[in-house]
Length: 348
Image: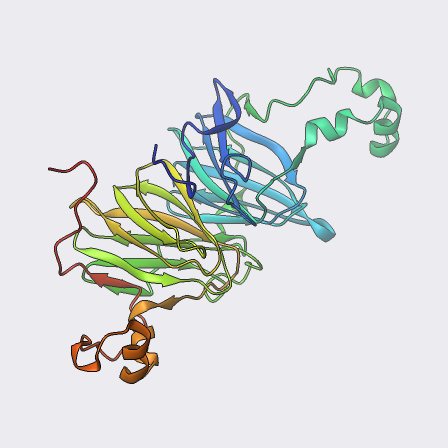
């Protein structure tokens, strides 16, 4: 695992639950103290397994299906009910307080990466919440005799359970749904020879209020230019590839570290940072933000924002010795790595 206060393992990290039907791990401010306003979970479900009905107490949630096919059912405010199928490369949104379940309806294992808009997530399970009430209270609620609930064992919920029999998928589950977003089907709004970015933000997904996600793909010949986000933190998950990242802290501390698949990182709001691939295969990151429309300020456009006289004075370099910065009215997000890569620690 990378040694950095900005990084924590998601695979093999802070365990929440595990049994023969699946597992849940997470990165929160408990395992990554620098983390604020966001957290991330990895959920795996065996065929026929389901994440029991539950609801988040203190956060909206968006989730990306890395592999598999799942059925999501949710009941929110004002009896707003929907059920829909989410396939590999697609995303779903669940409002804080809405009760929902996730069910693996495919033939193989399902893997989900979910971000929540809090660094200390909490939830209630439907089983625990129902079991908290007496048989008489439940009988009155459902207009049934109290004896109808005698079979309930009142044990603590298991979080992941197994379905008996085949999945029941409603005929309407394949229809368009406001809580569903086809990330993999999006024609990447930002595309370059050396990388591209797909964007799940409010501009493209109206359901988002305080979260968004970028799927960032950078080839071995590309680099995410140095930049910062003025109004959002950045919580990233390494889906594939080997990368290096540098973050500058306000006290002048420079943190350069490597990232590997299964790790998560966090960059606080307005901290300058950059990302580059360390292998020819490139990298694929899922990057979550705590705003519905994240923005950034890049180094490239910054050099065009000030006169050469100002830059000369700021860098204490005679104007004649300044580089000829290309005029850049709009930052490109991803740039070509035209220069040799800086040595990787341990190489040679």
